[in-house]
Length: 281
Image (cartoon, rainbow, N blue to C red; front, side):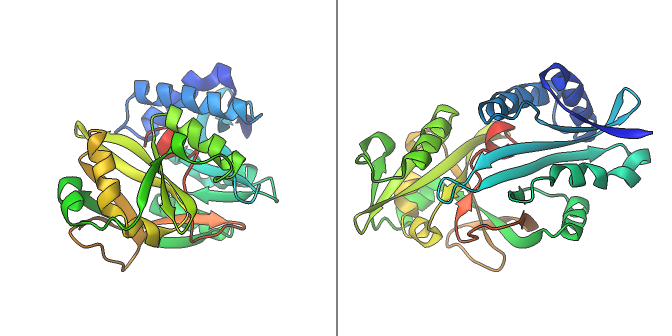
């Protein structure tokens, strides 16, 4: 009989082994490092588990990771679901993992990188989907032709109290995790923007993971491009609503979506404490 088991720190290696089978494009070492980061984060949130196993006896045959966070603007709990995999002969029980993960009825749940199969299953549990296209921007060109309407301010130069304390703490944590964090000063306010840096084919690639105002980002792409170039990053992957266009960029990935269940301001890009940062996927 299949059963569920929380994944505690003692079983991280077993989780990494199962994930490396489910996602063979990533190595065992990749998953081991990512799960250590995830375990440290979850522990800091008072959550000793990184997710749930589906067990056949004492052998894990399925897994779903859960990344807890809190919306710094509303205080609402957010749980990001990630890396869902079940061995083929047990997929008839895969929904048990989802049901267990959705136990907190007060939380908002996200799946930022669902596979087509996961997206269909999530939809049955009340997730709403947002179709997106990912554009790739060559930052040397963007730095030349992109707009720069406002001033970029380093995080440490933001006046005290100009950004809410809880959000400022999150921004500093992400800077410590290797993210590029800045703020756009516009109309007397400071709007934080956060980029995660990944490496694809040995080339650094920035991905925007937090922004309160996408229009403000677009009107300051030139300045943001110059900031990233100074950090040695030549490319930016920017996800926008399907059907939108970005000048001097090309559509890199089409037909993708992200999903949300629960209350969330869908105008704000918020992928803090996501698999992009903690697992580097």
